Length: 351
Image (cartoon, rainbow, N blue to C red; front, top):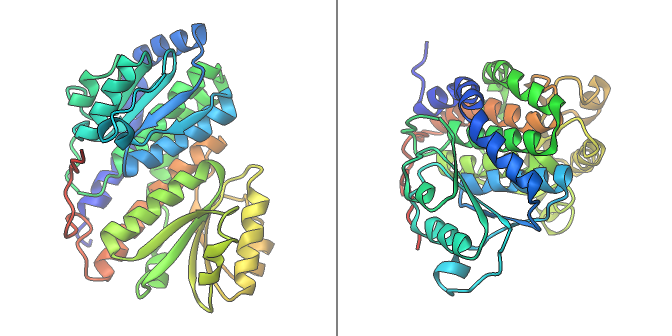
């Protein structure tokens, strides 16, 4: 058996992490959701960078579509560089971080708390500076993560956000699907995406396309392709890519497309069809059975298997769970070290 990278090993721990997290966080999330039901915030603000900011994008889709709470991504420099005084009384401020150590994220959270926001940190280190600046601490329970590229902590952040959303909205079906998620993640971790390694081995650039709940997974995959494989990958919404970025499409240009079985599916498949007509090579990841075999044949695409999720909100976690080991193997095939890529550190301190 080939030696497994830290990225592969750590991403494979995600199912157990999520199972542990669901049990351990039940109390704090019940308390927080009860307060949010009693005192609904007028809006929510997320504070994060990197992979954690992709999780924050997922939070935006969750809170806006399922709870009707307008959610914006904070620019930490508004607090750290420009020292702006924000009016945030009663708002919900969510900080997301693997380390909880970046000074600008911590300062932004401290300012939000002083401005009257309900502050919540989703953080892997509950003793971190970010946690100390927060009224509520939601541990990710991911354990030590040695690879520079975050994997299990990203999936853990998404699962914790789903847990909060399900309790806050009272969606019992979602909570039930969340409890079954670890089993689905195990299946996703075993999905065979080896054909994608061969298809992407010699490329220099690519696009990762998705819409809705899957768009944050596209952002995450694009970042991982950059940092571990030295591939210039950019994530775009299927609604945006037909503007300027479409000019990049040429014969055999590789496009990685993430889809889910909801109202976004048809529009994303239509984009894939248009790209196919322009000569692109389509790599399509979709929960089992959502795209009919006939459509897959018409697109002449490389279908990347993803197990059925049970709930549309869980699909992005399964897609990225299947994607992580593929990206690690792709990096190795290109002569790169996916665990410790050059020029990068595990904890990035920005001010």
